Image (cartoon, rainbow, N blue to C red; front, side, top):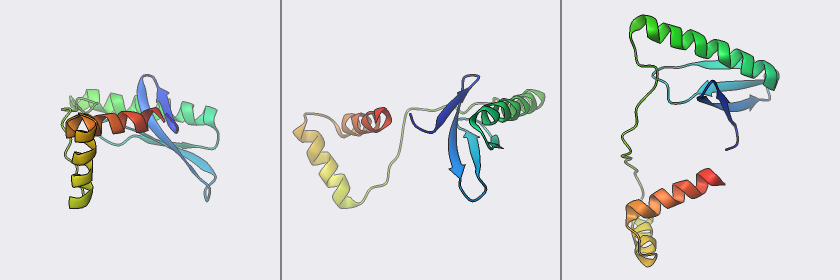
Length: 111
């Protein structure tokens, strides 16, 4: 997946800020914020490790679970027309709407 960096098993979304000429990383799936900045990929990984270490130490000190849990249930708001079209498309493929949406998300994640 583009713009994802894995640091010590934790995933971070990476973006480049052309105005500041730095990379910014933000860990996903944490019960709090942990971001980091650097002007090179190597430094970004180093800064990410430091940011993650501080975050995890703070969670341990406070007795907080560092990662979010996900139920697997997702509520999505669509326009009435898009919802209707999605149901029609799912039925045409012999799928439930849930299967259709899951397949579409999997497709986008593998792109």
